[in-house]
Image (tube, rainbow, N blue to C red):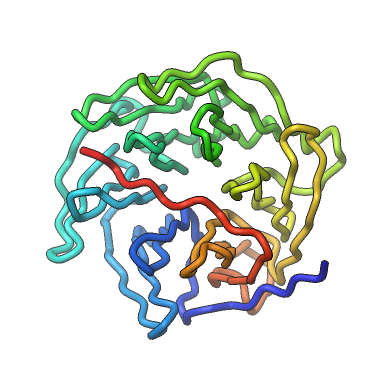
Length: 288
């Protein structure tokens, strides 16, 4: 089918990332502008919080407010006052070369987020889990650019991307404990000859993975049971970074983008939306 995403809102992000749908709003981050952004698709209003650090991802908190992961580790963010309260920083000795990147909460309310080596030091990053009791655990690594992460509807499989590998891994997921086991490759974009690098990722209710291909100008839908692409959505800018399902019935696919230096693209950095015939899964808030 031919799908035609359109820009929504007015903000131009330097490097948009980490979209999620919560309480009828689309949240995302602008990493290089140190910002968290909230978009109301009904009114068109955009609210921006300047975080004062590179922020890789944001998630809602079940008791109200937000949680971010950025240069200084995990922090609470009060959206009313805009103030941050630090929780924990698992990599204090790796600044400024490492920072937190993509992340999401599992259905039990644990916040999973990983780091990236901004100097591309192979194996210098890790995937972490922030539990509701605010304990932080290192759960997977070494990795280089921790990126897309999501869970299937049954919450017994976790999917994960370390971007330079150009692969998607699947793990058996133990929801009761938050443990992962049996990592295996389910998608290999390099072997498929797909241009770009797998970045952010989300999942629909059928279990298909929607992956933004950074440097590829597209979002691809894959069946992880076969590793094959099912759908391709083209975008008018090369840096497509992350997708998220939103809207009242979770059938709107929102996609963040970034600006590639030296390339003139009028719509780069915009948030895009397109209606799909399939719905996504709801966002899970942090339970702490």
